[in-house]
Structures are given as structure tokens and as C-alpha cells.
Image (cartoon, rainbow over all chains, first blue to last red; front, side):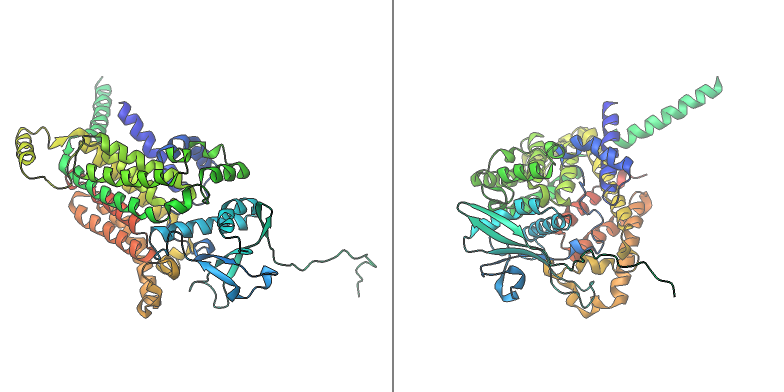
Length: 193
Length: 311
């Protein structure tokens, strides 16, 4: 009897976890939250990983980590100023496990950057930035695929200057300069002609 | 009175059906083969973690214990992550990580050859869970599927992936005659659990695929292969694959054969056809998306759906 109860709860937990990766309802989210102790300790849960395999999202595109040792404003750097880091522990063969881990890491960093979480991005990228004292800038670029519009080019989804002060190293995110509007005094209301 | 008796007998029928489904004796050798193949996939998984383990997890790495702690503190995810448990969070010593991977491969060999009783099978499951939890944001669905699969097969009695020659063969032959060792309820329960889990994953995959428009507009197969720089085989350079007729047809076939296979595999007459469709689906997904280990683990779980026990 206990086995029957356990197997029912176990399978229900797996169903809830695997079906709540795409826009879960509030009930599903609560259930996943409630079942977290069981699903996480045992690593049974899907934990928001892409069960659907592909939806053609931007985060599924290839991302690359690039570093530069050039001086000056990183936003003005030429492509030749950047060096792509192919993998850690040797160049990872595309599509195999080490390359997949790198891809997952970079897409997570890109997601955090998109969600305006620069401090979390810095926590993850600092060890790479501190490895070489010559590095002055670091960025993550997203490569276009055949599914993108033909005009879409390589896009920097995160770009930061590496600032070294005595023993400490920090990342200062560089953002695109945006056009801004200044408030102007109103000189008159709309006129009807 | 008669009505009450009818209700009672139908209740008993349901309970009997449930018990037969889960607790009827199953073939120990069949469970041994499935477990052995899962062990091979797991061993390849552990080996694949070797090359970059020192970079990610050890002191100074992006996911070193100290860095993970700081990350969770900054993100405010500390409470959510308290259930992500692994002994590897206790250290950043590179030797421990390599030792863990070696232990993982050795345990895979022990379990696949049926040595050491049930303990190595449970140890292997714990090792996969420990590594998967430690990997955190680097872990994929492969670890989750392996955890589900290895947990289920650990319930079955130990058996080698292939029948050993000599004394043990003679022994198992005599045991088979007495009908004791070749069939066991835990082997049946184990295979039933892995089969239902595989079906749930298959159904969840299909349902969540429906949430993306690429699986309706015919670009699903192309989306799997589109990140050509991150794929083992670059299908997008072949004009045949780029032909809309081909990749759109493939998308619709992939959307069709997954649910079809999941239905046919549970029907006794079409069981073999259903299994072949599901394995073919895994092969295509693995080849297009370079999800080799995930596809291999899932295909193995689909193969566990036992012909003799389908209704």
C-alpha cells in the first residue's frame, strides 16, 4: 500500500515538473514550489529546462564569450580587437557535452543581462575576467542563425569594462547610448484649424 | 445486497488491476539489460564531464563553492537552492572532482556487470544526483532523465547486462528452472516505473512543443539544427535539408510520430512498431539537436516498455 501511495505521488510530481516549463499556471507554480524538496534533492525535476527541445527563441542561438586587451572605449572596438574563448580545458567539439555546458552558461548569462541583473552577470563572469591581468573588456555576443532575418548581425548582449583597482577587479557594464528627450516648456496648447 | 456485492467486486477488480500492473513479477534479465545500457550512457556522461570539471567547479572557477554561495546570496535564491544538495559543494579541490568522476565510472561498470548486489546501483544513482545538483545551471535534461532512469532500475535485483558464462550461468539456469531468480516483483515494478516515467516525459515533451509556433509553421526541425556552430553535424549546410519541403515534412513527422509511438507502444499488437517509432524519434532529435546523451537515455527508457506486460 505504501508503495502504491509513493508511486502515485512520485509520478504526479514528475508530471507537474515536466509540464510546467512553459508558462505555468499559478496552481502549477505553487505545486512545483511545494514539491521542490522532493524534486531537487533527487534531481527528478525538469526545473525549467527546455523539455520542448526548441521554440526558436533568441536564447537558443549560439553565444560566444569574447575578451579584449585593447585600450579605450570597448564600444568602439573593432571585431579584430576581440578574441573568442572557444572552451575551457581545451577546445570543445561542437555539440558535445563540454560545448553544451558552455552554451548553457552563456545563454544563462545572456538571460540575466536581458533581465537587467548586472551584478549577477558580474558574479559569473569575474573568474574569467580575473584570469588574465591584461584583459580590459569582456562581452557575450549572440550569433545569428538561418532563422533570423537576413539583416540581423552578430549582437553584443553583454559588454563590460574590466576595472582593476589594487587587488580588486570589477566589471562595469557598458550600455548602448540611447537618444533622450529633454522636457521643454509648453508654449501653447493644441490649436484647431 | 447484490448491488453492494457488485461494487465490492469492481473495487477489487480495480485494486487487482493496479497490483497486477505494478507488482506482477518481471524478468530480472530484461531489467539487467536496460540497467546495463543506462550504465553505459552514464559512464559516457561522467567521462564527458572530465575535460572542463576543473575549470567550472574548483576554487576560482565560475561555479566554485564560494562563487555559487555569493551568486545565490546576491540573487536572493538562497532559500530556493537549499534543496540542491551535493557533497561536492563542500570542496573546491580539483582531485575530489576527478576522484568523483572515476568513482562514477567504476560504479557504472560494477552495476552493468551485476556485481556487488543492489548497493552499487543506489550509489550510482546518488552519484548522478550529486553531480547533477552540483552542476546547477550547467546541468541539462540529461541528468534529470538519468536520475529518473537509474532510480527506477536500482529497484530491480542485480543482473549483468549480458549473461555471464560458467558457474553463474549454470546457477541462473537452475534458478530459472525453479522460477525464483529469473522473475521478481521488484524487476517488474522497476520496469513498469521506468516505462511510465518515459511515457510521461514523452507526453510532456509533446505538450510543451505545442507551446512554440515553430512546431506549427514547419520550422521545428530547422530550429533544432539552426545553431549550426553548436551542433556536431551541421545539417543546415545541406541543400536538401534547407529545402522547405524536407524540413517542414520532418517537423510534421516529428510532431506526429511522438504521440503515435507513445500510444502504439502500450498496445500489445503494435508494441514493437511503437517502440521503433519512439527510438527513431530519439535518433532524429539526437542528430539534429546534438542531444546525444539525452536521446540515448530516453531511447533506453522507451525500450524498457516490456512487450509482455502491455495490455
